Image (cartoon, rainbow, N blue to C red; front, side, top):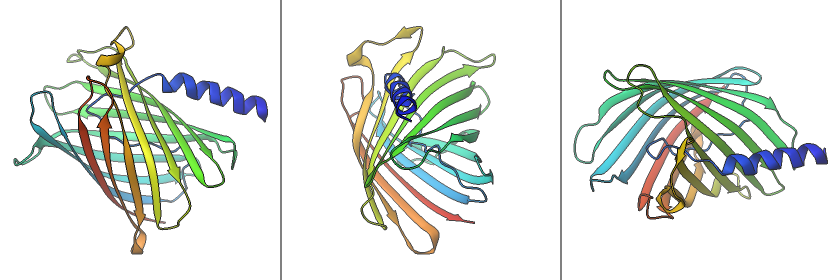
Length: 241
């Protein structure tokens, strides 16, 4: 068990040195899935782009645990400048596979695959994430190592690499405070200098509401001069079995 924990920890450190595309949805994924779980989620975030415009992203998704260790999700994605109607940009299909779950104080591991279909004129992309999670007595640590590549005739970028990480305190059944971090080193073949890499960090709170509803709200702040100054995100979800 100790050797497996050390191996998983080494893999986590390696993955944490990588980074996620700056415009992607800011969400940390757990490797643990539940059969027959169904969930509808509506996600919105706001940030300021390099031109100084306020960009608002919207995502609507449906998730389904179709097997004991497998979950799929279908997303629609919209984006627009604040004050204007959002424009549909793409839809994507996700698949999370739980490789193993070892229980409290051991690393759980899973994989995430995503295919993103862009609106006409854009490039499709595929994304792979290695999902690690360790549950302690009163908290949970989750780390995602992320790789993304554009494909098709409109592809313009190489393979990008990234991370997403979360530490959550589990002391109250209805409220879960957490800290999340996201980063980006750019293309593996041509990684950006440290100060040019976008890395953001900030507090997030999850609230459990009656009727299977949950609400998440958070604010993420830039750590380098290559980062956005602030990103605010929120998600409302309802799940059932």
